[in-house]
Image 1 (tube, protein in one colour):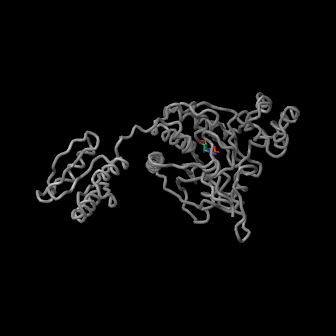
Image 2 (cartoon, rainbow, N blue to C red):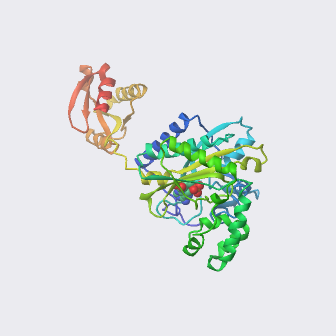
Image 3 (cartoon, rainbow, N blue to C red):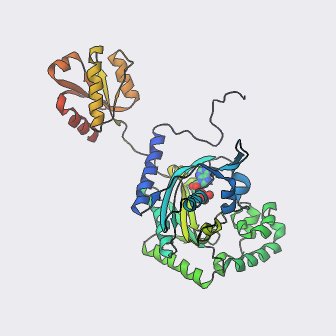
Length: 418
Ligand code: AMP
């Protein structure tokens, strides 16, 4: 047994209040937004059979070749902590025979073994949607619009939307051949990984971060130059609908996305304030994936948005310095029974209430109330009980006044509003 480590594993994060609450709030914003577009939540396991990811993300993708947390369980099964959402969703939809068309959203932790830095972690949060069984370019535009709406509702205003089309089964082979020939002529300039990609999956060269490779693909044939008529029309309709929705976008010919399952529309949200890890999220169409999993021909499109980067790009929450929490303070042990009763009544009325049962002295109870950042204290002593009142102390202004028993809920609510 190795010695107990006092620090969290590299690339992971702790979220202590109020950061945990800010994160939950962002998730709630996403859930609400997705539901207003008809999406319903799907919850899938945090780990899947490794083949689920290898098959869908592609054997040559960075995720599969370098970044998966794969392990064998005690029965020698090959399992992987999910590095992304779509493959598990598609597997679950087929396994559970979901009715089509079907709009699903998800929220949860994802895992990739990559070099940690600002905005890049080994465990990170993603929220996403998948619209399965929808082929219209108007769905593409609506999905792109929804992702942008999420960032805007978090107060992120420097987000730009990039879009591209990488074609379909008809037109991709033509582009692949042209790109392969172009890259073969420049093989000497490419990094070792990209040389292998020429044969295996030349499109991946567009993703390479190595400067020489970036330069080499400057004048490379782009997928858009090779689109068939149907793909061209689809893309034009996506762009027209984005314009109709007043969503500004940039067409980026290099945007091929790092996963093999995409076709036609690809898109990404970029934030200028994030530095090197500037992608807030992205997605695309994956019209062949369901079929590749053994299901029926099912067009589909989705996105995954990074929660960590969204929260880095969003303005810090200017929440109230005090929480909506009433701290009930007792003077002597004879009031403990009444204290518990009052706390129960407040909770039943929907007001969060807390009691410090340990502190024997009032001063210590006030300290606890302060540590909990309660907005007010309700004091119960023998005098109060004799008079039929509580003393309500505002912990921001320090003001204190008496409130009749039956008016306490209203008085605390008013305090929270002020
Ligand atoms: P991808 O499908 O790889 O483009 O991921 C979608 C989004 O998830 C990215 O735009 C990031 O916001 C987020 N993301 C991906 N990998 C990480 C990571 N290692 N750490 C934090 N966020 C990530």
